Image (tube, rainbow, N blue to C red):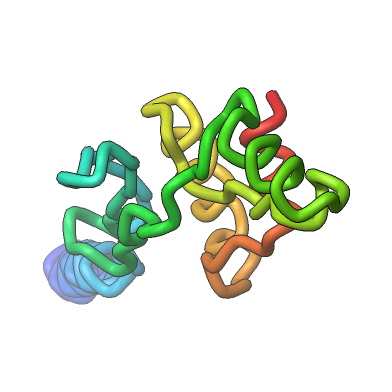
Length: 131
């Protein structure tokens, strides 16, 4: 009687073992995000975002160049035209520091984790630059 009971029990244990191995192989891999900051020839910074080692998003270094951070160009124009300097001032939304690009990449990754597009709004970029 022991022989008849041992064989089905061994078959059952083996089937459980193979089922658990198969289930582990089918489980999805945890998603990991990484980024790499780069400097473009125009001295601005951009970044690439990788998902599980594959590039999924590339943010170009902005082509917007600041007119002049201390405002001397703008103030010269305002003197010639007799207008307010703020009329001629362009918003500088370029990532001119590596630290800004890193913060932008991290924010874009957070958006991707929430299943949102990684594109940053003008307001989000303004906040990053102001920090």
